[in-house]
Each structure stands twice: as C-alpha cells, then as structure tokens.
Image (cartoon, rainbow, N blue to C red; front, side, top):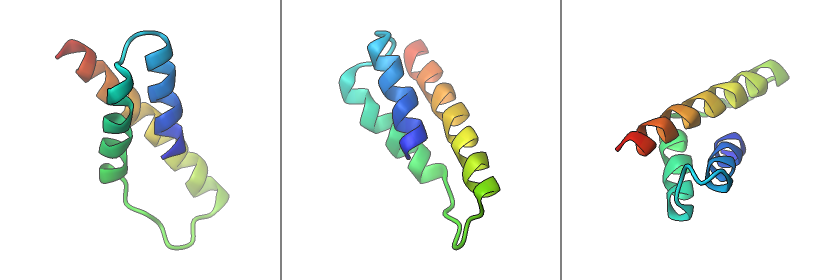
Length: 65
C-alpha cells in the first residue's frame, strides 16, 4: 500500500493526477494484491516493486481517460 501511495503522491506532485485520485490508485492496487501470511524480505521487496509498477500503470490509464 505504501509503495502505491508514494507513486500516486509523486504523480500528484507532478500534476499528472488529481489529489482525489490518490486514494483511487491505492485502492485499486490493494484490491489486486493477495496478502501473504508470513512474508520474507524477498517477498516484501517483490511486492513493493509490483505495487509501484501496477500503480504507474493505473496512473497512465487514468491520465489517458
């Protein structure tokens, strides 16, 4: 969630996203994510990377719409 939020806030600061769309991006990423019971560091890093990429994709789509 934090990774998606960081990407969305950065897009807002660059005027690529409305402030009210930040939560929409984070919510979409959270809905796509399947939590792990006992994640290891590698899992956390992989999910962080995935969330950042997915958030960028969502933002790119939002900008086009």
